[in-house]
Image 1 (cartoon, helix red, strand yellow):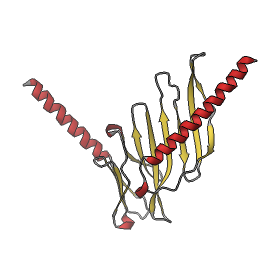
Image 2: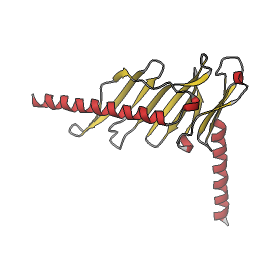
Image 3: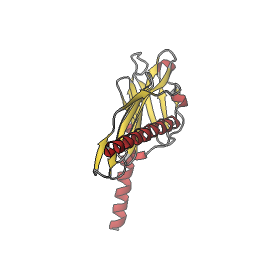
Length: 203
C-alpha cells in the first residue's frame, strides 16, 4: 500500500515538473517591434520551435524538428530576440534568433557550444560564431599527460560562414556542421601545439 502511494506521489511530481517545464517554454516578447507581444513556443512533443508574430496575424512559423534533451533544453529571451538551448550531460549548445525586418522572417544570427570533455577535461572549452559578421571564436583546452595538467590553447579567431538560415528552415543539422568545423579547428590547433612543444623539448 505504501509503495503504491509512493509511486502515485512520484508520478504526480513528474507530471507537475513536466507541466512546469512546458510553461517555461512559452515566451511573450515583441520580436517585430510593433509594440505588441509576439509568441514563441518550444513544442517538446514535436521537437519544433514555433513563432507567432503580431504583424503576420499570429500565423505560426515553425522550425523543422530538432533532437533535444527533454529536461534541460528550452528557450529564453535575449536582448535582440530569443535563444534555443540544448544541454546534455557534459556538452551543449545554443542558437540565437532575431527578427529580420527586411525579409520579415525570424533569422538564425548566432550559435555557441561548450564541452567539458572526459574526466580529465581534455578537449573542454567553448566556441561561438556570429552569423551576421561570420566571426568565430574558440577557447579550448587539452590535457598534457607529461605535465598532468590542463593546458589552455591559444584562442582561435577566424571567419566562418554558413548559409543564411531562417526559422522555417532551421534544424540541428546546421549546428552539427558548426560542431564539425569546431572539432576540425581544435584538432589542427592541438596538433600544431604538440609539434611546437616537441621542438622545444628537443632544444
